[in-house]
Amino acid sequence: MGVDRVNAPTPYNGPQPGEEAYDAATGRLGVLQAVCDIDELIFDHQMPGPLVAFLRPQRGGQEWMTDSRNVQFPNEARPHPDSGGE
Image (cartoon, rainbow, N blue to C red; front, side, top):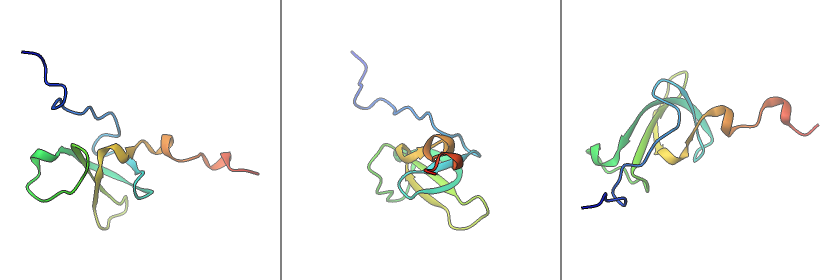
């Protein structure tokens, strides 16, 4: 039998738990807590992708979750402060 490519795990190459992460869906920076396969979750996740990322604000506050495809390294997601139009 061949490998089932449809159900193959989706690779995740973004920030790792404990690292700063940018959520492109919300435009927020946070600290990545975990990336989980939706099959591991015991609640209604309502995410379109196969992986869910959990983030928290850097200085505390309400945690949130997003599709892992929205998670990016901050330096790749935001323009550098000196790149603005002058």
